[in-house]
Amino acid sequence: MDIQRSNKRKPKYSWLEKTSGVLYNESEESFLKDCICHRKRGLISCSNCSKSFMGRIGTRCPAHPEIAYLMDARNCAFCGAPSQYLQMDQI
Image 1 (cartoon, rainbow, N blue to C red):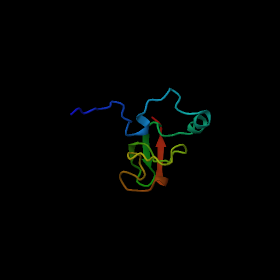
Image 2 (cartoon, one colour):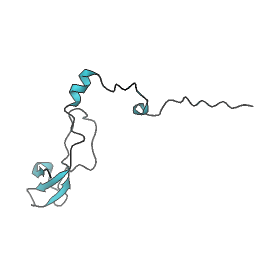
Image 3 (tube, one colour):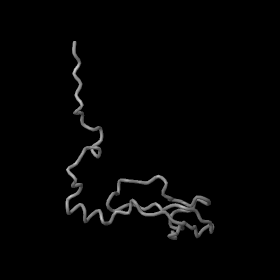
Image 4 (cartoon, rainbow, N blue to C red):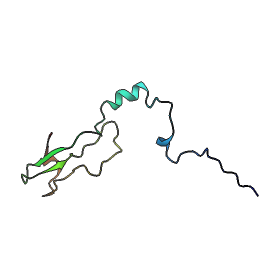
């Protein structure tokens, strides 16, 4: 009894598939110019408690609204104030 195995399995996730090198068409590229997903960290200061910490303020990306970065600050790390009280300073 022979067992035949095929190495031509489809990847479980679509983004793991090999592409021809072209990832986006022109209309998608212009839309992705608004992407803020990979912005830099900075010093976040809270105007409520006057303390500061490192990170990014949680903001919804216009190009990827379904993605949420779990380490982005949505509240102050010290007093729990909402993001309206947080200000970001680039370092």
